[in-house]
Image 1 (cartoon, rainbow, N blue to C red):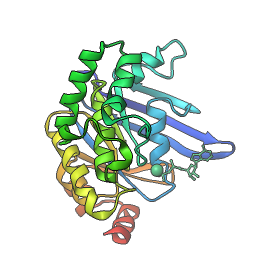
Image 2: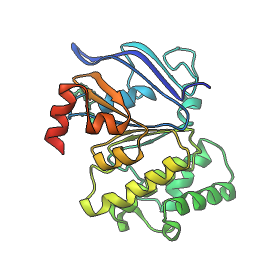
Image 3: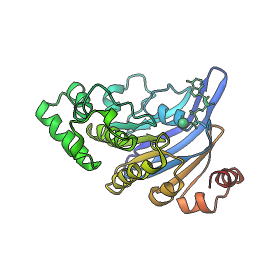
Image 4: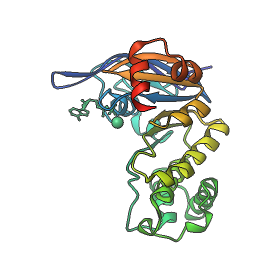
Length: 243
Ligand code: ADP
Ligand code: MG
């Protein structure tokens, strides 16, 4: 079976600063991989390279069997198959929740209004917000807005989802509802690469945890190994600081 993500020898520099220094990572279909590590270690840059929001300086990146570092690759067609959820929800404030979910379906996937509405209704039900279709984002809590952002990604029918600290901007009491939705997605078989500081989530939901520091992948393994009995001193020191 083709891996859902293959990253080989990924290097990314901004000017003279090497932010990713040779990353090798693969994610199998249906696998949930959590990426942890200190601020500035390159986690967001790694995610952004995977759907080519950043151009790699060197290396090979192949999500969903498509070699995106190949100049002939059809990037737009590929990006549609990858859902991305950011720390900031980036909803359109002037549109209702339903329209936030249908606009890309209509414009990018050319679905009819009826079809897009039906998919939006299903996606909102999956995140527990079936009753909010006519609300505007400003009238929702941060947790609800992030669930709308997840539903918006789901409405495009992604085969793979990338999450970049999806709960970091939320008040503590709103984190749980977003993690619950993510846990359900994982249990439903979605392939997920999740940058997170939520260690309990990583421990319970991840098939594998990857620790990054200074632009390298320091350690990777099952959650009970990396989070409980890490092999590397740098991982141990990081966990000591955050736990
Ligand atoms: P993390 O998500 O782990 O906190 P990032 O991937 O955001 O780390 O950043 C890694 C390093 O790359 C940081 O030192 C950051 O300042 C730098 N960086 C990220 N994006 C850019 C950019 N567009 N231009 C210059 N430096 C950047
Ligand atoms: Mg980041």
